[in-house]
Each structure stands twice: as C-alpha cells, then as structure tokens.
Amino acid sequence: MSVSGVLRVPLRIVEDERGWFCELRRDSALPKRMVQTNVSFSQPGVVRALHYHERGQDDLFVALRGTARVVVLDRETGDTFTEDIGGENPVAIYVPGHHAHGFEALTELLFCYHVTEEYDPSDPDEHGVPWNDSRVAHLWATTNPILSPRDAVS
Image 1 (tube, rainbow, N blue to C red):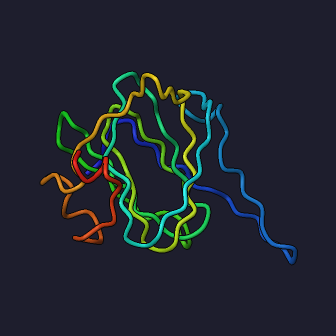
Image 2 (image 1 turned 135 degrees about the vertical axis):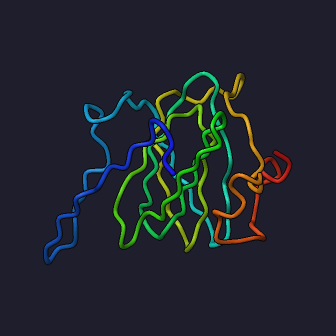
C-alpha cells in the first residue's frame, strides 16, 4: 500500500578512490523547507515509533550508516508504507508529520532526520501510536524491540 504524501527520494552516491559524496537534502525538491536536523544512533532491535505531529512537522529520514526499516501509518485510512533504507538502498523518505511514523534499527544505525519545525520542549508536538498497533505490528522485523519508556507506553 501507499500513504498519501510520503515521498521516496533516491540518493545519488558518487564514489572514487578517496571515498564517496552524497547530497542528502535539497529543500527546493521537498514540499516544505527543513529547519532542524537531528541525528541518532541505535543498536539493532531498537524501534523508535510511532509518533505523529498535529501541528504539521514533516520529517525527512536518511540512514547515514547501517540499515533502518521506516514504517508509516496513515491514521485515517489505515494504509501503511514501509521500506528498508540505507546500505544497498540509498534513499531518503519524506513523511508528512500527521501520519504516524518511526523506524527500526536493523543493524547498528546512524540515522538522520531533517524536520520542518524546530522542537519546542515547553510545548512538544509529539503524539504516539503503539509500535505494536495491529495495523503495523507485522511490519517490524522484531517482535521484542528495545523501546524508550515513552514508546513502551504510547
């Protein structure tokens, strides 16, 4: 199935004897301008999900090192999107924030997410759907994820 507004952005990697180069983001190619960039490191089996933003923060997910499974749930229709990114599949995934979204570390994972709104700790726009919601539970590689306390009770 597909989820309205989710964009799959192929990343072009240019390699030579020195290593490689990759453009991660070009705001003119995205529906909204990005204003903050976050990076996380996760051990295999970590699930960071599912979150959504009522005020409209969108995310652009990129696996910098390792492989992540991205999962998106359209909370209105129940449609889902999932793709393993990083490694042999260099793509970025743009997710409209009103959809519940998250990712699983399939390997040790260095993960980058660009966002369209700055985080405000005094008024966070983060809401949760349980990672094991019946609409998405079958999409994860693990049935026993490592979760944050917040994700464990969403």
